[in-house]
Amino acid sequence: MPEIIFHPDIEHEVKSSYIWYQKQAEGLGEDFLTELETGYEAILELPNTWPKFKQNFRRFLLSKFPFSIIYQYNGKTIFVVAVMHNSRKPGYWLERA
Image: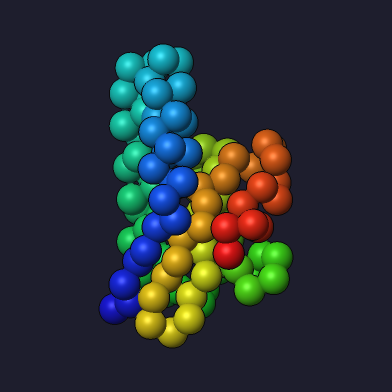
């Protein structure tokens, strides 16, 4: 199974989204984290499954939240460059690659 590596800015992206969801409803932030973890697991198991998205990236869409996991796979490692809100600043992460 490949190794998964996260861009350092992802911690901030996930944390701020978690806090926002928790303020909306108790437990909603936890649901967001759970869905992210499920996405990471699916990507680890089948990294070439999700469609290509801008340059050499792939995009995993979360089903319950308006976010995507944007990543690159080189055959050995999965590099997650963004946990992107689908409606805000769509290309902000391109400079991270």
